[in-house]
Picture (cartoon, rainbow, N blue to C red):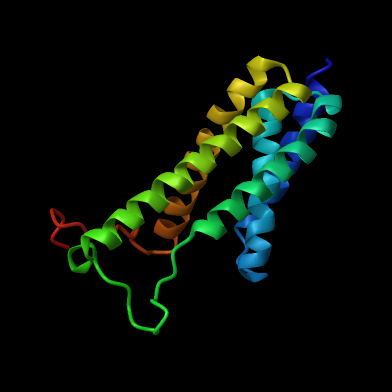
Length: 171
């Protein structure tokens, strides 16, 4: 009975958010909020968070994701060079430019790993280690489900799913 009530609440939130997600009004900002509501409900249900755990976990989780977003933003390359021209392709870069790019990539990945270690330690302070381990799997499941829902909704509107062209894919 202890986990039934939070599960029912999460289910109601999830169903309500799915109904609003299907409605295109509100633009991208509203859609992001709807996805966040779905994510909270999905993870809460998947981890079987108690109300007490949820109350201390979500502020830590949200703070961690803000930090990750800021890190990505700080390392995100610009689409154009300083002169406003398109960036060079890898083949057009000098060895020094390629080396700098590789070093920046490794620096970012190390910073990302350090941040992840910090967040795991913070999660362990508010959740049992089993639920911390399950969190990462729950996030993957949610992303897969979200991508599947997006594909299905595109097909229902009569749009073929978009795929990136690759050298082996002649489309």
